[in-house]
Image 1 (cartoon, one colour):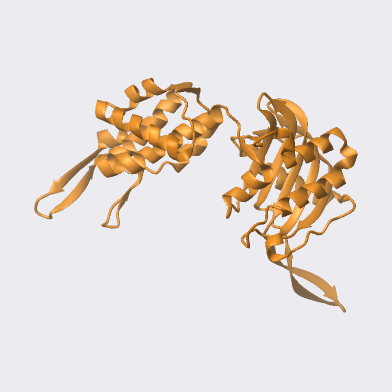
Image 2 (cartoon, one colour; image 1 turned 180 degrees about the vertical axis):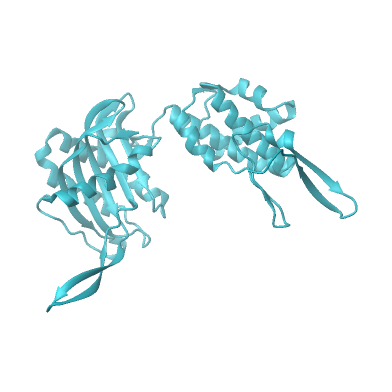
Length: 349
């Protein structure tokens, strides 16, 4: 989603956020961090690398007036006056603190940075990054004491995984300011995205592709699998992926004709689509352009494995739509009184 080749941190400050549910308090820094070269070179990829593979973006949301969205207001003020960075960062942490409405919300360090040289859609822009460090790892630190080496256990930040983070870009489109988010500790789905950021997915091809694939995934699990079996489910999912790969845009009616052979299957899909939209409060577009990035990410979630009660598992490639029907045959053995699968192949790999 972004490129960080020319990204630079112009300002960075670290605060600590408490949990008001447990009567915890915030602790604030009064000055920005002054890096040495080694820590600076380690910090940039730790904070920004996860956003390189993000496929969807968000936009700020508010029930009455988008200008009343707290995070939108605070970050907008910093973009207008970079000298307000420290005070703006404190307001951001206080806003984060106000969202800790249960004991599950973790305390931690909050790193706020002002970034320059972020590349988004081939344009360089600034960004405000907010990163919450919720977990720390133990490590052994050696030291010299009276001509002897000793060691002590210390806790620090692991740079292998970012707990929570967001980038608010200083760029807008018809829907508003662009926001990217990462949440690897999503113990409370409402806390970071809805309560703190106050954002919705951007209404673009990424969202439309994700929603449609989610519809197909749930339809295969709740309708096809119980009604027609796991083999038919795998075939449907593989045909779905194949349709998305072969078409630059999806047409709902063309999709049904291309994926389903029987009218009763089309009717089941139509009925389930209405149920899915109502249940999830989403609108599934009948026509939209396919996002290849989202397709690549979402197809890994489509489970086509056939698990049997005899401790045997058949793995079907979701990118091979013809394989289940051509090379997999199901039957019943009268002598053993058991079902079976017959698999055809030329050679083992």
